[in-house]
Amino acid sequence: MFGLDPLNDDLGVGGQPTQWFGRGILMTQACDVQLAKSVQFVVAGVHEARKLVDDGILTASVIRDRIRRRVLIEIVGSSW
View 1 (cartoon, rainbow, N blue to C red):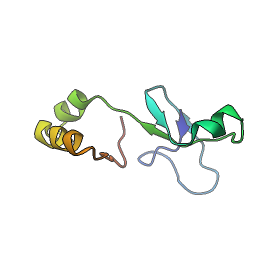
View 2: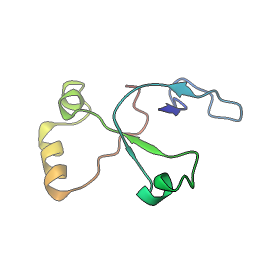
View 3: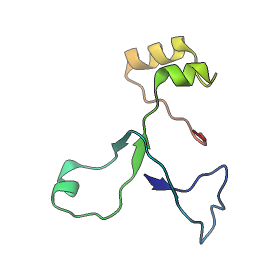
């Protein structure tokens, strides 16, 4: 994945993207990928629930509740 790190990069014009590896969900329709309609995509990073709990970002009960209700958990400005 490539992107700007909001904690370390200048988000203004000319900011250089950072590259990292991880799991993610491609936020587009499958037909756009299949037909090569787009050259850039938005990717939502996927984090392990255990790491979120261990790092004190979320509690296990919050994660369980959100999964049961099928609610997306958004973590903005995460540096990991």
